[in-house]
Length: 418
Figure (tube, rainbow, N blue to C red):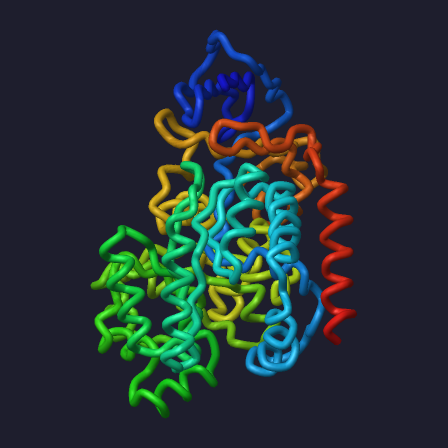
């Protein structure tokens, strides 16, 4: 489809944007191109679509279930006992609900780690979002489960997928996946050009157990296994020291900060963003799953990330609004090897129109500051992904049905297995 957006604000200046197929082709003034759709951008600003660097999409089904518990207790008592009963249909509707929420708040791409890969793939294909979908790997240090995990990866990896979807391997964590399986994951990813998506150094308990069980901290353990590489995306990384930050930087590892989840679970607050940025580590932001962050709103995640950096350091200059926005756009796309995150010719047509008539943009001294610190996701008016209009004037096709069905699915899951 060819789309022409007229008179929209970009960096405080009115421009026209011409989209042809999947890409932005021209950005300029007074463009007159033949297009199937012409969108009036008056009273709106354009930003790149937001990228959620780490989430578990179908965990929308567990929103508000098991709140206010530490991670280990939350996993063992509230989540894993119910997750084992999830059907593919459950995961399908949970993922569609996540996609609704992400589209409504401006996310066009996300990096997912969840079980039951096929229904996740089906849901995302139908919803039109871009995603890196991980085939999740557990083995709980058992050879038989490791063998089953490898068989499942083989099945997942050959499923047909559109150009919007990339396949990755998602070993859960060093406390649920053995060193041998982690090495197999890395070898497979290297051979096939896949990314690897892993939780690491999320809690003090995980750190202490790593030292106890492996004789090394989590990052040093991965380094001993020779798993540090540009293929690796690490979620959390709260418990790292200066030497470990240098290890991550030297090997081109990417890191995703999840401030809402970390705070709500009491996992920690001192994410070393300034040190990682100085070392050259590509850093993005994620929401984590809705069972821990309770929403998938990247604007909220960016705001909390920025405020948290300033608060724990007693320094208001750390992670200014522009850097927070970069983390959820350009950086997020870069960690996923996706040519998006900028409103420029040649970039993928993943973008959002922001309604400037919202009170949060008045006065309009600083658009980026208002976007990060003052708004909520409901300022997102129109979402375009891969050159397709997913939402316009905040109208999203099928939203009511998806919300209703996902609610019924969650209720049935908890009632039947409580």
